[in-house]
Image (tube, rainbow, N blue to C red):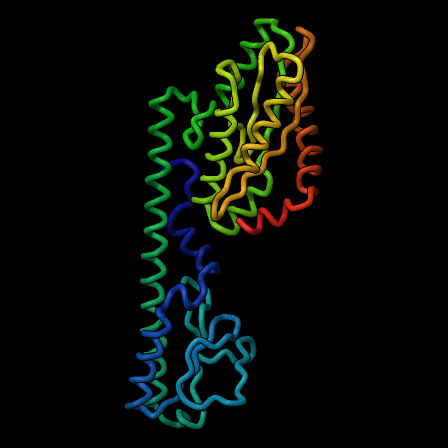
Length: 305
């Protein structure tokens, strides 16, 4: 198993909490199934989700309010997690062993179907993630562990080596830029890993497009980049950051609205170490982030995308 990947059995136990009843069942088919049983058994059925919201109603349940805590009916549980509650009318099953057994069998059948559907879905996602992880590891081996597999920029380990090399050259000035994507988590929560990864790749592409060949660009965290400009000219770093931010703002897309906060500091003394300046650049980045996120229209553009 690739390093960092959660074991399948563990994720099956944990991820069920993220699934709703209508994600596991085809509600239309489920309704037809219960209708067919109702027609031959004269039973009424009310199926609700884990919170008590109605999914299927067969028969007259006017005035009945399901209490999934104190009177949960027959629970449908998947990996020890309740995903639904099936109710029947007490007057229709009271004292009738065959009907009570029928309801028990229905719950068992629905539970088996739910477990199979859920497990198949999660296994498919797991297989995709494993394939991507293996592709990433193969890419890193092929490129000598220098590049970040997602963006093609330098990875953090090789960036550390490049900083040491620049320090050894005793070149000054050197501009140190910390660039961080604004509201990356918003995109991740709203659209998932695929779109949030595309946002990272988009920003990385802009950072590279606006850079000169001598710039050193690295991804050093999920949505965090550092850029070094050895021998930076007057206002060169500031102009670069403006171009990057303008290019992000001009980018149009249905889902992502890239925005980058930038912080700039300078190494002006050969005795300074670039690694010691990274926290200062990050501090300046957070000041820029506050400025950008409070600009008129920022939130509207993010949510519109």
